[in-house]
Length: 254
Image (cartoon, rainbow, N blue to C red; front, side, top):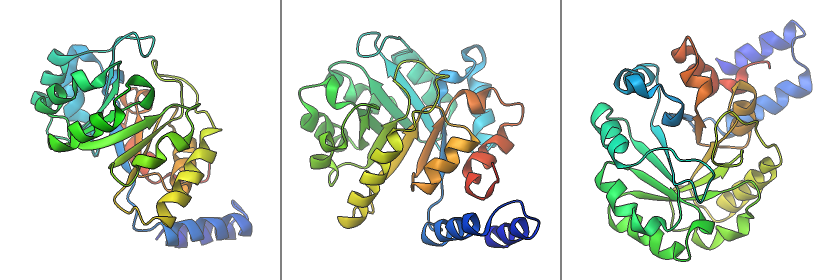
């Protein structure tokens, strides 16, 4: 269906032949990939958190992205245990917990006990990264490493065979509403090459920061598996359409 739509757009002169050839290649080679959408809970209305989480689930969200900030590792404070407990009570969607805190090894087990299915940590936040990853996995969750825009991919390479998720931050962590940092795309390309060469089919790539329909398309072209989106989804008047548009961004003419 997507390919037919592309040829129709070509017929009416909406896209070029070169563009259609590129998109068809992407669709064919990456057709098994289903982009997952993870609304960032930080952008929700906490005054009606239960209904907000129900709404994004009904709109087609695949999992929830939960940013935990301590005001030290990043210049902002989000929420902690009580809100995590509420999220786990209000929603049965998988919980993708992103720890932006110093010494995450102190809190990993607690957040898994509170329902975290994925736990992602930053290499800069701890001097016990390997221990953190082992702790996550031995407690039954999936382990992830988050790379800030300026963090070199080389930092994560020794761990890629053992983790489940690699998170590319396309904004500087700490605050929502920032613009997508395009220089991170090169890092995605290098990671894709590494994943393919080493056969790491289990490893999911996730992007967080500045996601809209245009940047979602860039991510899908670069074989990203999970998109985190906060205000784009929660501020939308039609969240179902917004999630569908993010997921189907490759075949849209932007």
